[in-house]
Amino acid sequence: MFEKILIANRGEIALRIHRACREMGIKTVAVHSTADAEAMHVRLADESVCIGPPSARDSYLSKAAILSAATITHADAIHPGYGFLSENADFAEMVVDHGFAFIGPSPKHIRLMGDKITAKQAALDAGLPCVPGSAGAVETEEEAQRLATEFGYPVLFKATAGGGGRGMKVATSDDDLLEAYRTARTEALAAFGNGEVYMEKYLQNPRHIEVQVLGDTHGGAVHLGERDCSLQRKHQKVLEEARSPALNDEARERIGEIARKAVENLGYYNAGTMEFLYENGEFYFIEMNTRLQVEHPVTEMITGLDLVREQIRIASGAPLGYSQKDIRFEGHAIECRVNAEDPETFAPSPGRVTDFHQPGGMGVRVDSGLYQGVMVPPHYDSMVAKLIVHGANRNECLMRLRRALDEFVIEGIKTTLPLHRKLVRTQTFIDGSYDIRWLENHVTD
Image 1 (cartoon, helix red, strand yellow):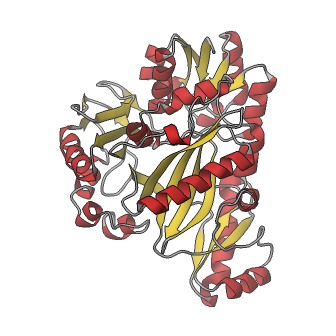
Image 2: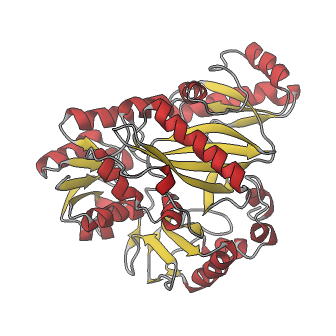
């Protein structure tokens, strides 16, 4: 087992990884920019290294700075968390080449799944159902017109090299097809330095269902159930729950086994998430995230497994030590992402936290690096906390979540807590009958 792990991230996920390491008797190294010198994970880690100025490009995205920090602190391994360099295959290779263990999948699998075209082909080869779409990048306007006629409208253009809603455009008819194609290419080039886009049939009212998987280096593979991530704004997840209120036992067992077998077929190891759109009883693979997900706590709450601990064990060469039949699902869990944003306009709201009180009680968990007096800098992602609640069933979970949201106090900055308080009292959410377009159309407009 590792003796010292460098945490190549910031915020709540850096603190989350530190806690798992501490419980395993592993020392931690925190890296930080000058803007994060006061951060809680920096204060708690065994060692800390400043790796640059506030700009992420010059600090958390600096491969050389992170590897230098690992070298001078004699770390054994590097955990990338999520975001930043977590899905950068070149960084994973550099980590291994410099003699450290990378706590994540192989560079080969990161690279394979990082390109939407190769990921889709790999998914098809592994037996995953996919949305009908182009075999590769759509190179010309003429090809776009031919494929749209073949698939039927509406169609969706997506960047081959990225995600998060950038480089995504919908065309509903011949009249807007070419404009959507050109705009998607322009946005993809600006966001990712790669203007290639591909086309898929556009599903109009799907759910966003993802399956958490784990694989080890000995051929072991399990799935840890599904999460429903359909509550989104501008393609960004706002709230997640496990298990999905849209699936029956037959459907969830079917997609879970499909995902588990795909892990075996791919030879994939460490944590990963297979994301699907679900409409009219059918699942369609859209991508695989080769890292820990923001919403991993809801899976931990219903399975009792510590996913960061499992990541570390797998990276050290240990087998899973359990099979699919050993996984038990208990109750229901919901996670609210709390962002430092105006709840009406969604404009960023950095600043100093003047008061902070997190909710507690049975089945309530808060993952956050906030404390009274800490500065929330303007340079990074706006998520500052995650409220995760577990109950014996969805109704108990929902009632507990309402109570916890009402107890949660963050002052000095604006947050999306009011949005969540409104959301959990909305009848469509209570019924569990929402889809990926509902939140933006009916709650945040």
